[in-house]
Each structure stands twice: as C-alpha cells, then as structure tokens.
Length: 214
Image (cartoon, rainbow, N blue to C red):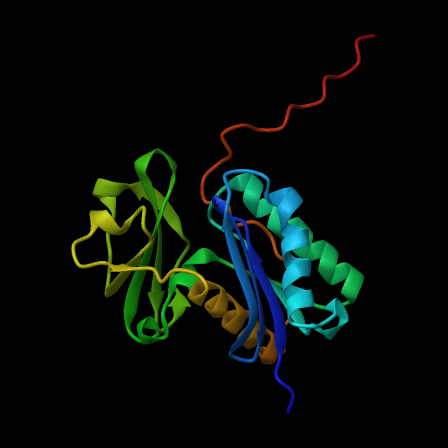
C-alpha cells in the first residue's frame, strides 16, 4: 500500500515552516524565522520543498495546516493558502491546532495539559484525556493556570510550571501535525475546511462600512 503523502505548513508565529512527509519519512523540511513576510515567503518555500523531493503538487494526498492559536495574521495566511491549494488540487485540507502538534505520543494516555504562550503574559491552555481534547481551549493569566496530568509547554509558557516538559522543536511538531491529519484522513469522517482557532478576540476589528449620507 503506498504511503500517504502530506504537505504540512504553519505560519502561526514568527516563522514560516513547512514539511513534506511520506508516511513517517520527512522528504523535505524548512523553517525560517521571520516576524513578517510570511505571505510572500510561504508559497516559494513550499515549492522549494516539493522540487527538492522531486514531487508535483498532484502527488499529494492531503494538506495539513496549523490553525493556531497564535498570530492572527499569520494563521490567516496559512489557512488561506491551504484552502486555495486544496481547491486547486481537489485534495482535502486538514486544520491541526498547535495543542495537538505539541502533544507527544507518550502523553496520549492519561491526562495531559498543553500550555502555549499568549500575548500580554497570558497562557493558552488545553487539557487532554487519552489524547483527546477535553473541553474548549482557554486563555488565562499565568498565575491562574490549572493543570492536570502531564504538562507540556512551549518556550513562552515553560517557566510558569515547575517540571513542565518543553514542547519539542520543529520538525517534530510538523511531523505530529501530519500524523494527526493522516489519522483524520484515514477515519473517513467528513473534513471541514480549515478555519483559524482564535481563543481571544482580535486587537483590532475591520472597520465597518459607513452608510451613505442622504
């Protein structure tokens, strides 16, 4: 049986990251730090990875994309790119949140809590039971974080809980995103188009149209 080929990418923070996987093998991977410019860099970076693996976009079985939480603009860039590629290729695009991307296989039994740094010193919190999210993700002040079971934290959140495991760096996070997307694909369930995961409201809302003056 041929291995599932999945293109996965993420621009939810100050980076542009992408990888191409065939089964559990990473055929190409790239992560570039950047505070801005992801919209211009993402597609060329993806094309470089595809060319390096000597594969065409038509060879893909699915696209996995990071949906956050994270930078609002960055998330929108990646989600829009995934939706566009999926529509053009006739392949499914599968959204994977950063909480699942940070959850190591050994934390998929029992209770676990994933902590991600958020703006203004706050923390994004998602609890898991046997690998499944329990309840909605929340955002709270660092001194109000409540955890259960194993605690996994990213760099920004690791310092608030003694003994917290730091989330693995890339490309392992991309690999986990691809694994989750592959599991969703294999389940046969209906796959909704990826959508940004916003846990807090945007700092600025689009201006409302002003009605004409008569």
